Image (cartoon, rainbow, N blue to C red; front, side, top):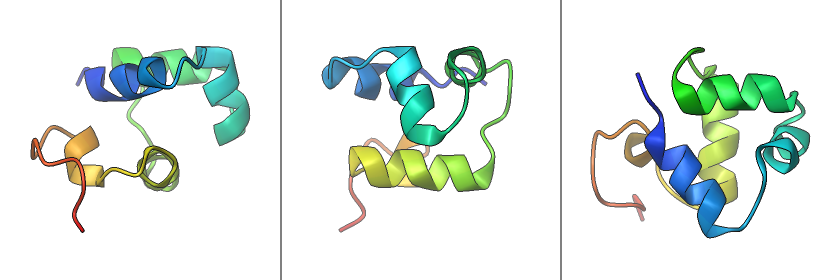
Amino acid sequence: MLYRRIRDLREDKDLTQREMGEILMCSQRVYSNYERGDLDIPTEILIKLADFHDVSVDYILNRTDKKNWK
């Protein structure tokens, strides 16, 4: 599964993969693997991403086009 939305959200904030890795406490390489879909995103990281970008987990997973669940 390609996680295009986490790339788009990261780029919207002008952050590098390295910076996102630091925020999530993982390496740039691991974060890059998440974006490309080479690694499934663990639930804990998925929640951190959703909280950081203020979007729903369903939005990140392409289950909805509605960014927020609020």
